[in-house]
Image (cartoon, rainbow, N blue to C red; front, side, top):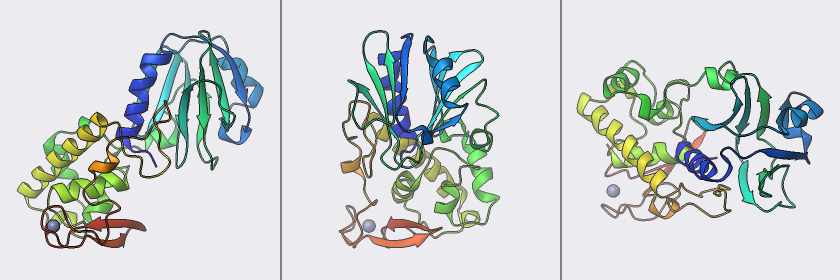
Length: 266
Ligand SMILES: [Zn+2]
C-alpha cells in the first residue's frame, strides 16, 4: 500500500505532466472503481475540464478541476497511475488534449474514484489527523504521551497522525532506537523528540528516493521507487541488523507484520 512518500512522488510527477491539460475523453473499463456519481455523469463531468491543481491528503490524491469540482483518487491497496500511452490493463483511462493518457491501474479493484463538489466532507478525509510535516514537536509529544498504545500502532493510526503506514513506522522506530512494543506513554521526552525527528527524516528521504516498491507500487512511468533498497528493517526478518548484526525479528502488532532489531531498539 502506498504511503505518504509514494503518493507525494506520484503527485509531483503528475504536476509536471498534466497540469492545465484538458481531459478530452474518459474511458471506464471497470465501473466498480467509480464510487460517485453514476458512470455517465462521471464521464460528462470530467470531459472538457482542465486539471488546475493536484493536491494530496495523506495517501489520497485530489485533482482540482474547478473551485467546486474535484476528482478524488484513493489508491487503497493496489491502485496506481501510469502516464503515457493507453494501457490495455487500465481500469479507467483519461485522455488529454496533448494526446497523452493517464491510466488508472488496479489489479485488485480496491481503489476508489470520485467526482465531487468538495473533498473535505469525505469521511476518509475528515477523519485524518495532521500529517507529520504539519505537526510541531510539541503537538507530536502531546499525541504520543496522552495515549497508552503500542507506539508502532499509534504511529499508524491515521486519525492521530496521517500518512505513515507499515513500512515507514517500522523504519522510523529503528532509526529512533525504540522498540515497536513500547507503550507510547512510557517514552521519555528525549525519545519522543528523537522519534519525531526520525519520522521527518525517513519521510523526506523516501520522497527523495521516490518511494519504496515493497508491493505493487510503481511511479507514473511504471518504475519502482529507490527507497526499497534503503530500508533497514522492513522485510528483513532473520537477516543481520545493519548496526549490530543481531538477526532482525518479526512479530505481529495490531494485525500487521513488524520487523525490528531486539538489541538496538529498546
Ligand atoms: Zn541492531
